[in-house]
Length: 181
Image 1 (tube, rainbow, N blue to C red):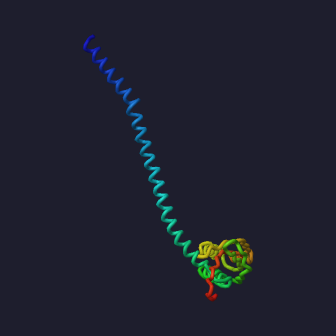
Image 2: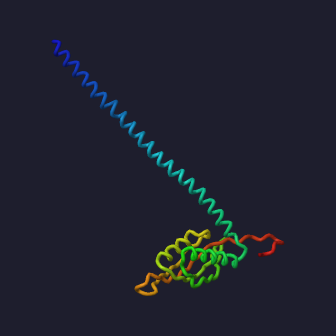
Image 3: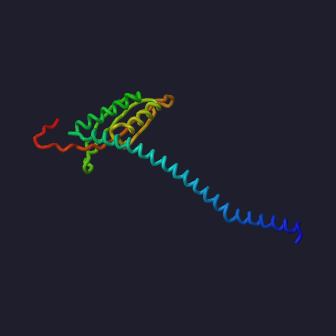
């Protein structure tokens, strides 16, 4: 073989070795590293979500304990008073005019008692929206059972609101010898 043919042969062998090395060693390794980076990114995102959930759970646990303490009531009248005060506070914060707030009968629901409150109010669209938000985010666990909106006239922004809201409360067990409040 001539010197030129040897160089071509060596060069061809080097190219073949590089091609085989790229196909069977380098490319699979790059794919493996890319997969590890993607997995690291996915796990980092998941860790952030878990940490966020833990932060929220502490907030919700605190809120649940406050709601639970609030809902341990001695009587139906104290539950009615608490509900009416929460509704009035929400109306005042949202600048809506309460026309009436009437508690209905209480229904037993297992270990809890459901208190239903009928209310009617007036206000503009923004005030009504804010009032509904105040009810939904109140310290008491209110549930809007029914809601009826009607406009006072066609050219005004004012609305009449009729709603039925309810919440559950738990009566405390009085020990013998304790007097009711």
